[in-house]
Image (cartoon, rainbow, N blue to C red; front, side, top):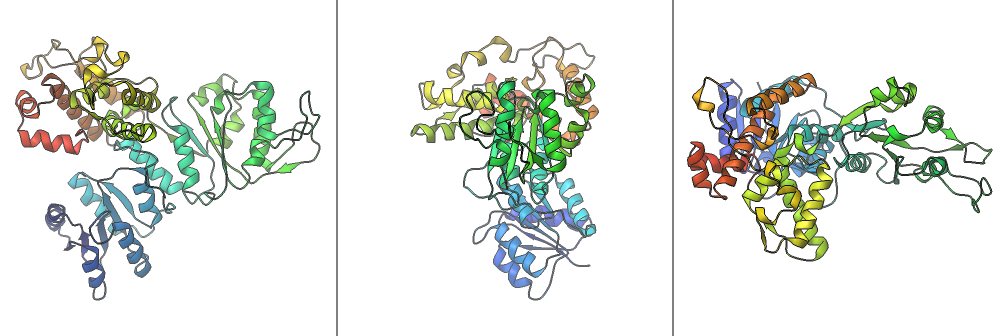
Length: 484
């Protein structure tokens, strides 16, 4: 049996994986750098390669390219502690079998390596992302699923429907799908169908001829023509008037349309990506949306989670937005204290990521000091409901007495146990996977952030109050991405 090769400059990662795979009866060979591994390929070949993405002397992506040139069929698993879209897409673009964000569950890592042994067909790979700034960030499992989907869709021209609440970043996903597609060199044209008056929307989409209506003093190209060879993003498609839905269906069906007032058919080679915050199935049932258009658009559906569903991403996003605001303002980026982060993570964000971004920009301008404290947060985050307060839990077990309402599960008068059960039922009913890990991470993050809020950021005291060691709380803060 060929060996599993592991390359990582971190000795602890190599050691842990080697021991875990050896216990499973899998032969392992480890390397501390890409140079030694490439030299070893002259005499031997692995069955599976597990590689870190960032190492001194050469990145995992460079190694991936060199290995794939010599062994195209070799399954390669890319590990990275940098959970951003560019890393995920670049890994798939290079031909990676799978993308494994650190820190990872060891049992799952072994299962993934076993699956890599059995697989002979790799997924289509994504086009390498360019640019220094990540397009999207997220460590939450739901966001990792979105990143993977973008990577796997990158070589496809298929129509995509993006669903999610307002402000959750649907246009960012659409732009990423375009950027990492074969149409990347073509235009990306976006139109919000809910923001344009009904009488003007047809002209905006399909253009008009001179004299087609009062004020049409010149021929105008519509968005379909402007997006020729690229991608057309139709935002808030659920609000499109029925008569225009009919015209849109024709364009999607036969690829041709007429300008307003025109008599010659026009053609445009366009990939359509649609988005909505509405329940389109319900609008189809009520007759507000055409069923045939729904099925034409709903080829691949990507659901973007609301920010309250991925609270573990709030600290990372907050620091990112503070840095970006500082760059825009030409000032030094402000830091944020852990109690302030706890307050941010406990907010429900009805405006989702867009609202968090606006809050961070407000803080960059309005916070008086270089370190943002809880008292510096805007008024909507100063409400009493945001503060975790102790409640009596009706239970026979004294171990769960006097626990606070956890910000991750809301702040209603009901017990936190009932809130967590309700959230678990919602996720399970929605067909979500990895519910155990997702809720466990949120539970641990809520406990730690609440303890840090109570102790004003003093980690040792917070660990003592929680009944855990100081090394444990430090490790958990790092694993959950809570460190400032």
